[in-house]
Amino acid sequence: MERIGAPNIDGKDKFKIGGLRWLIIGLVFLATLINYIDRLTVSVLAPLITKDLNLTNTEFGGIATWFLFAYTISQSLSGRLYDRVGIKKGFSISIVVWSLAAMAHRFAVGLGSLSAFRFVLGLGEAGNWPGAAKTVAVWFPARQRALGMAIFNSGAAIGSIVAPPIIVALTAYFGHWQQTFVVTGLLGFVWLALWWTIYDAPEKHKWLTAKEYAVITENAPQDSESPNSERAPGWFELLGYRQTWAIVIARFLVDPIWWLYITWLPLYLSSVHGFDLKQIGLFAWVPYVAADAGSLFGGWFSGFLIGRGWSVDRARKAVVIFAAALMPAGILAAFTPDAMVCLGLIGVVLFGFQVWINNVQTLPSDFFPPGAVGSVAGLGGTGAGIGSMIFIFTTGWVVDHFSYTPILVTAGILAPVGTLVLCVLAGPIKKLSIPDLRETN
Image (cartoon, rainbow, N blue to C red; front, side, top):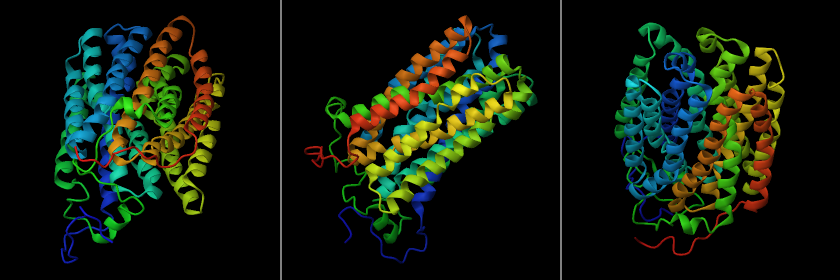
């Protein structure tokens, strides 16, 4: 039965597209890839920038912390923004802010200006994740949501793969690092033109077929992006649920692992293994191939298990526990003198992290109705940002005074601890009932 609010489909429109949800998530994947290229330009060029601007490791850690501070604030604010104004406008606001901020890095002349530009970049880039989580909740049935999350999240890994060679090549072409930021920042505006041409909510989309609409809404009659169909619960109300806290605390503990490597890997390879900028461009992307494989595998595997008759609770937990068992490989990386072995072990860590995060980022849509997904995802991102901010700034200080070894060992312990907290605190993974969520605003 076609529900109220479904698109008016007469079956005669030749311009309708089968599998439109895959095109939509493909756009979100592309936004995520651009997000990571813009984000990693500073990290890849860190050996040059720290030298030109005379920055210590602690000061570079502080720059990364300003980014994460803004990113943390914006996670929750962006989640509310997407729940209020919808996906199309929300993504547009996010990408305009971060693209302009990325281009502004061209004018950085010291610690203060670079920190300010990183702060604004963080405000914009944070919106990508609650926006993507809400897009998946609106456009995918429950059995395909982890795969949808995996596809968009693989943009982070592929962005990390393509960023080092692209950024190094652009810098070599221009002869200085400043102009590189202008080129990478412009990518967001190209994406924005595609977004406004293609995206609309399922209930309004003229290209959506009746068959696909039935797939999208199976077993989830409440899934709608109509702004007046649901009350958006407040943060304090959502924090009354232990499931929200499970997501927030788990991401507080585990997300710093990812941020450690995307922020510090080029400098680590330079200072510990003696890599120059060319070698960073040639090899720094290698662990992210494993990350991309983990992203796709993690999303596919939990969906495969659900398709084989496993409950969502059993499938999600089995996959996140498996992933958490891989991430202590970073401890071994701290003690190997061989750079290639080290990169391989870091690849194992990032494979495990992406398997883990793709399933944990699906939990807001597993637990909560669509009107709350953006906000819960944003709160989870806030927890991730706070934990990462503390860890990344601490890394700079520890490296200046000791070495990278204590940091890599600590990072190896965080995933099992965070996963234990998640499984115990969340309880069974099933849809919650939030009172009066269907009320009209």
